[in-house]
Length: 300
Length: 314
Image (cartoon, rainbow over all chains, first blue to last red; front, top):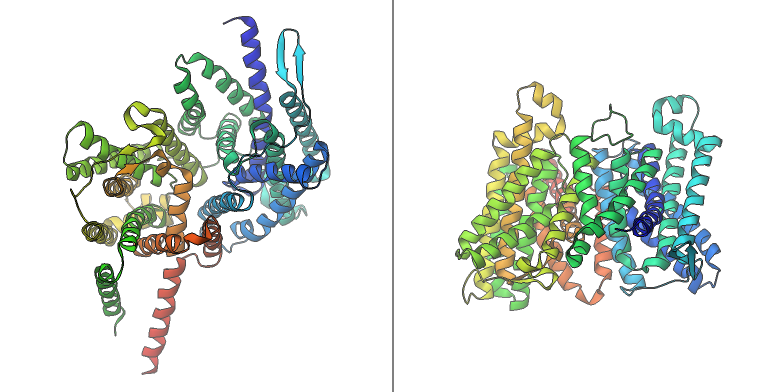
């Protein structure tokens, strides 16, 4: 393999990683604060894609505002879901909170998938991308819509990390992730932070869907595969760990990018592409369930 | 009337009802109910694992698909008669269930859910990708279980197998094994400290539950005579989950009834198109949120309470 081809695969891997990271960060924040794995995250991603599509086609907004609409719509939706369905997990109303949280989010994902199928139909839609054309970096040629989407993803991730680190709200979110009881004693409203975390997580999934929609089409099952990748990433990095989610995304992007071109039979390599991450997921859970950056004390 | 006698009576009426139904219904509904029995075994086997042992799995539909492929390929390539093919389905699914149970011994809750999703998707991807063996997403033709069997014959066969499976599950759960299972669900460390071999029974539970799913899948394949990888998808798993939850997944019989009832409703409301799946998703959420024991569980609890009150008046 030539050096150029290696660079090309590495760059492709980095672009894909940035989308993966955006979706995985949402899962990580939700798990960190609420200790709930959101099995409906892929459908939040899909709804983000549709919100973006509707904002552009029905309201005629420019793509940048479309992103804002997708983020806002999913944040409101996420807050509603938290209020109506997730709250029994930690206020003592559910008998077996963990079992309840798994089943309710899984059931929600099936509901949203079928709802999208009924409302929007099974046809793929292709909304206007942020940016058209190609960009040449030396001899490398990258399609502009992907690079622009990846750039926006990186900016959003940076903004999120800064927000978590320096704002009072971000500190509250991290405090609740680290120790719920202590955070409550210090006067943080755990309920409000939980709702905020779910809204932010949903908005991040929606943004990822809105950014990817123009690249890979908007269809009802579009979230099924990305969300499985997001699970792999958060498990790889340690559930609930923010830096873990980012490094996990970079690792998975590169693994997938290079593993595909190393398998000779192209049709079979393509069919098995999505299985690498799953094998990785099982291997991590069996060998190091706390992930690369998770804490040891938690029971897997 | 004592609660025991009321229960025996209710079970007798239920079985008699299902035995009489084919005399009243046309071919189409007999077919629908027969498919419903497949879902009944599947939902009950899932409830056995999730409701009694407290071990979550999203691989149940994939296990049924595995059983379907095992039986179909056994008949096709090894020349087995379909009945032995079903035996192979039970063995293969049970063995993989045992293996997954062993691999996931240390995992709980969401981690277990994620791992079983990964196993299920790997099975589905493999069934799609190995088209030389499985015909991929075009689907695999399967030999019929009864050569030239009528719909009614299949109906009674599947009714019998479903009833047999439920009786077997009921006996298992009423034995010491059932107590071990529930002790693991309530408090794993506590059970271990009292001498329950938690490691062994967690694996056994996974194996038994998967074996029943494999049998269901094998029967389905030989009845419908076509299986595709889509029967292993997470959407299909979602339907099984909805059936067990709506029926009541803390009781294998309620989960099985949920399977039959939902399958019949799905067919009856066909003119609503995709919206009926939306409605079922919504009902599943409401039941999970408001009626954790399912519709049948809540109904039986109400009837039992009324009987007790009436008994007190006398």
